[in-house]
Length: 125
Image (cartoon, rainbow, N blue to C red; front, side, top):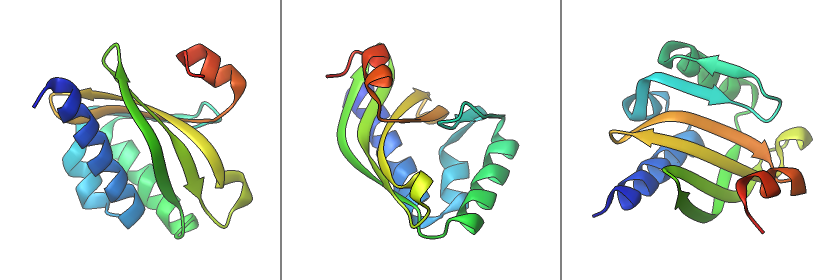
């Protein structure tokens, strides 16, 4: 297996934990200096803050889940396109995730709305 394969497997496993609302699983896959960045640009630095944010998010949006369509690695960053599914309209729709994986752990999980601007910035069609 290559580092690329390992990184994509880590991202897939992290997403399985999100979809299952498995905070313990997320914790096992997070680097200590984990950072979460949402589509509004809100940053949650640190593993403890990240886990608290996920707990609160799952409590507010229990039906939220991500569906991945494409996964690629560019310059050490895993780029995923797909969609989020949620009864909350603002969280339902196309999304792009960029994920930094270091030593088999998620160091940064960033989600953006799938817009032409984000696609251009990431070099996606």
